[in-house]
Length: 197
Image 1 (cartoon, rainbow, N blue to C red):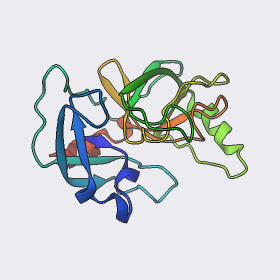
Image 2 (cartoon, rainbow, N blue to C red):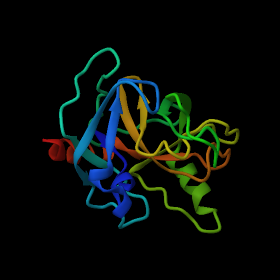
Image 3 (spheres, rainbow, N blue to C red):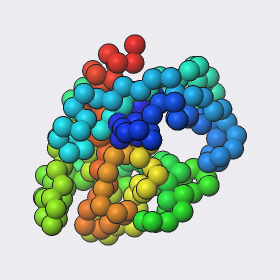
Image 4 (cartoon, helix red, strand yellow):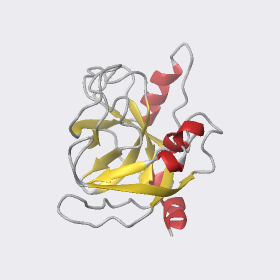
């Protein structure tokens, strides 16, 4: 499983405190719950802002694929998404900044945003945030209203059957001027494959 490194960083986020629930759209019930046995954060995580915010986790027992549990395809190393591509976030996070976590799995269609434009937006903040080539920006630029939010971190950003990003960070939720930022999976494909075996 691929998730965000910040989900496994620090004392309160140790592997022994983490489980995954698969095969249900309900936050606290149904599906299968499996303990995490190992998490490997990308070695660059924590060295350059949120760059490298990606982790490969191993489960104590294997997931069984069925109609409700299916894998996504990881794109080739270096694959670049064009701006304006419709992508999807899914998660149980809050539905508004500072709100309450959702009891049901939600998804939202948003669009990839040119990294140079996204970089300019985040550089304009009072405390500038760094957007790197290893990140994907996505949202509804200059309109807002749709995004991942608190509690969605580590979740998927996907296009069709491809896992293209891992929810990482942003400024609030669904801000019209500052899109959500995900780790770009294709920047780490070779590392993911090498780490997962």
